[in-house]
Amino acid sequence: MFVRTIARALAPAVCIMAAAPRADAQGLSGVVLDSLLTGGPLPNATLWIEGTPREAKTNLNGRFRFDSLPAGTYQITFSHPVFDAAGIAAPRWRVELPAEGLQGLVLATPSAESRYGRACPGARTPNTGYLIGVVRDAVTDSGLAGAAVHAMWAEVAVSRTTGVTTNRKSVRAETGPRGEFVLCRVPVNGEVTAWAAHGPASTGLITLDLGGRPLAARQFSVGPKAPPQAVTAADSAALTGRLEGTVKTIDGEPIADARVFVRGSRSVARTTASGAFSLTGLPLGTQVVEVAAIGYAGGRQAVDLRPGPPARAELVVAKGVQTLPTLEVVGKLGAGSDVSTFLQRARRGQGHFITEEDIERRGAIQFEDILRTVPGVQVVPVGQGYRVFSSRGAVNMQGDCPMTYFVDGAYFPFDATSAEPFPVAPIEILAMEVYAGAAQVPAEFQRLANSCGAIAIWTKRGGSGPPRR
Image 1 (tube, rainbow, N blue to C red):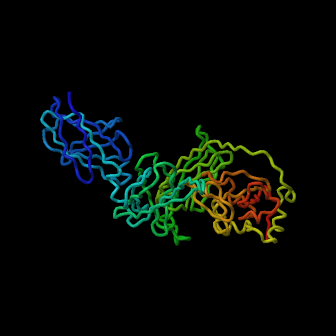
Image 2: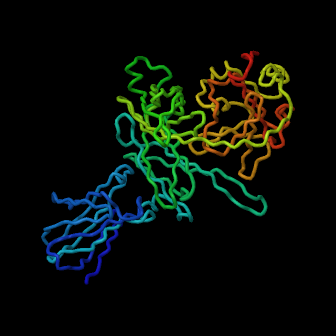
Image 3: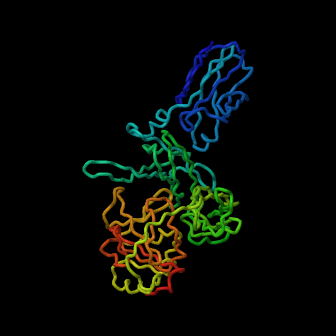
């Protein structure tokens, strides 16, 4: 019978552990438990004894063993890819090994509170945790000091006086000398949108979820801001990235003619018959590549783009299922999908009217990009995408005011709270009408539930000709 010894490292200090001897001569074995990132036994960690060439690898259950060690005092630490990527220094344990050996040793990492609580003023509030990591330079791959890291999320509150309201919360931190950062009081449940910025350059919007745990780690990569037009081809290659990959279904079937893009870039690719795509001129750093295909749910994936050889991404999308509501006939617009009445409504001056030429001048990549400067309209981050809300109507229980959509004269149901991109690309749009408030909406676009206004989209497939003003 023996007593298992448990050691907890209190960074940056080390623990002196009493040894429970066993008749296993000069052997040292045990298990590594991690409460920081994995929440259990730590597999595939490489342990080593400082000052010696001795190493041991943990198995899938986090267990390790050193054989034939002379009695004495040892300092043990480890390395692990997850800890390295997060920029977390592994703890060090001091072990007193008797001549008889030691078995059943438990090496435990410190708690998130003891490790990072000092970086956050005040006590940690319930159901919140820490988002930690490193911001690196996309060109040199070194830690980037002075970068800003942001996190944003929606917080739902219930009150007897105001009912259910949704507030948008955010936190910010600045990286240290080696690019390390700690974001405090991040919710442990629900989606969090995070990004890093250094000067004018920024990463994409990354969606994270702590999954109920008090700590999550994320590494960001930020590249230099490329000028609008690089002076030479060499300059362009050094300041932009490339991305190649494929788009497939969950069954492995390629998807042809899918639209692939990186938000923040004007480069858009269409997949070939084999599902392959190639993008150039992309912003460096951690970005989000997205795919949209008719009949499929949108897909996205975070990628790290660096100068030189192209990065690769394998995007998997699922079949999209859309349930249409009962058909409701509310009137007749010109000749069905004809846009001939576009100019008539534009002359009334009761809405905001956008032509194909306007869209081209704005250089819009995503549908929401068209609406960023429209009066009375808010473009709000939702997950890794954006949604459009009115700032002039009555908000719903979530604190938002979703607008009603019409495509080629027909009502188009669309969940404004989802993270899926609007399924009409700017290059497909002939004209748009935006009515930010209910009082502006003309009779042909009136519905029972559009107190937040309406957006009418005329596509090149459904329109009769390009409207001009």
